[in-house]
Length: 66
Image (tube, rainbow, N blue to C red; front, top):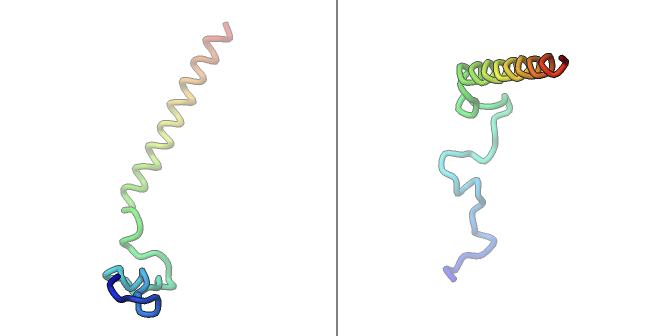
């Protein structure tokens, strides 16, 4: 072994460079969030796909009604 014990082994927060071990109280940092344009684009795509799926469902429903 390399001579380290549980008493002098650093924790994972100390092993990670650039972290202080605690998150700020004001919420998520800017770096932790997705860009706003990406969020809007994903929302538009999800809504668009659901509209297309609903339209196809309506077409198949109306075609099967005859």
